[in-house]
Image (tube, rainbow, N blue to C red):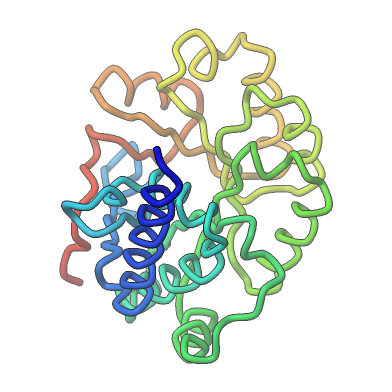
Length: 246
């Protein structure tokens, strides 16, 4: 690719992201229900953002990758949080699950979003997912967890069964929710796997709720319950989409 074409592509990408920041409603979000495995009642929703449909940033991971390259993750993350908070207004009885981007830890909420953030702290039950990649920087984890606890958010350990370093830190952090990913056959869904055994032990020691991911069939529901999961998320429990009316 020529230098001129590369510059033009970067300019277009920045323009697309700035457009999302000007109108965050274009970020979606998509909400996937989190349900109890016994009676299928909804306990919360996982919110996931995306770029504008029909563009190269419509995919969530592509949007994050480009935002990171351009140094725009912090602004994008705050805008998405505020959008989800707005959608969840008046829904303090169910949980809003988010994945804060590590780049946002320790940054100040933009003044224009402060009102939405303040209402969320007072009225909403927010759960924040920490993934294995975040645990590679212990100082970042400590800063992020201290911030989340100060806000009163629940701490969700996600994607950590195969990461020894993450499991070492997790035992100290005492998460509120521990995710068990059923989409990793032979590993995360196997209670004899060393990482899974330790993950389940951490959950038991901290009194964390076990949550299954990848609950895509009746068989997956049975497996999740055998592992001790009480809630789950997956195709068998509901696909991502617009937030249902309250």
